[in-house]
Each structure stands twice: as structure tokens, then as C-alpha cells.
Length: 155
Image (tube, rainbow, N blue to C red; front, side):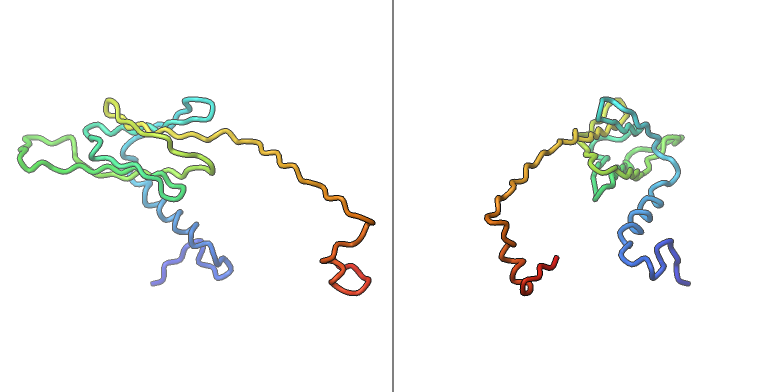
């Protein structure tokens, strides 16, 4: 059986990258673990906070792949520990966030069981470019245009 996707139409050639992004996003929505908050912490800054109690810095990874922020957590079971009751599961997770154009991850920190990932959108710089106006002598047609054909100028 052939799997049909929203970009399977032969009229939509060249959209394979979008299809891969949508597929990765749909896989990462999972069961809602770990819970997270997104808050504005400044004029052009935001913070994503994930509740990752029990994870250490070595158990976590934060990467940016294309425009996707990917946060992964993996805990190893200690074979020497014997539980009488196990209510806190050592589970792995992956959370993915699609970053808007221009948003950059500037840092991450682990504090009291919360992983904070800070992102910023740099202030857009206004660029002014002055274009020099060349003075043409005797209102002549530039040499490149004269060569196009006879006395007639084509654009």
C-alpha cells in the first residue's frame, strides 16, 4: 500500500523539504511529556522552560537542525538499584519547536529541574545603500545597447 501525503501530487514537485519538516513535527508531538512553558522575557527574547526533574546535563541535548529546535532527554537505568515501588519512570523524550525566521537560540541552562532554553530575535538593522548616478556624456545610448541592433534600441 502506498502512503499518500499532502505533497504527493505530481503538481507539487519540489516540496519534499516541507514534507520532511511536517513529518518530523508530527512525530514529536507525542504524549505531552515533558510539559513546557514559553514566555516572553524581554523585548525581543523568549524562554522555553521544560520540566525535566531527575535529568542531569549529561542526560539532555539541545540542538538546532535547520529551523527546528530539538530537545532530547535520555536517562540510563542503574542496574544496581532495586526498587520496591517505581513511580518515577526513567523515560526518554524528544520535543521539537519550529523556530520562526531570524530567531536564534542563545543559550540553555538547567535549574531546579527546569531546562531553560533562551532564544532571541536580533533587532533588524536598517541598511541604507546609496546608488551612484553616472553622468552620461552627450545623451548617448550605452555601448552595450547600441550593439543590440542597428539604430533601434531594444530592452
